[in-house]
Image (cartoon, rainbow, N blue to C red; front, side):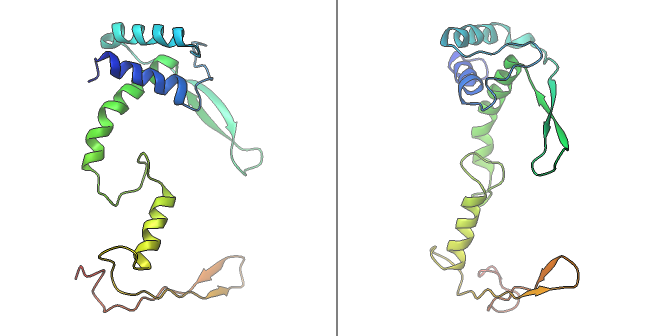
Length: 167
């Protein structure tokens, strides 16, 4: 799969068209924005993939969100390295997706925090087949002398020692 031309073309497309940083050059200063450039890049990668060594990344400091003047480092790889990374990700992703739990939502394509929150909401409201009982969630907000806010524990009406019928 790593050596197939179609896989290389998909990886080049992922690095040059889909990637948000596709217009940002690495240390070599090259950016591929045209179809002939993509074809040439795919040909180059296909011919020289077995003896490729990664090049250094360009280090750029960007401002942190909401931190005033603080800045964080960002490494920008060259376009060829991005294509090789996409090739590896495209080859490994199908196998690892099959091994993940159905209930795993962290750093997976098509999954995110909103999907996890939706599953929790549906589970707690009994909208799923096999949902466990009825739930009552309570919380009371208490202000303390400091600037932080604390919450009281969450209570749920189910027998002690059981969690959704798992015993």
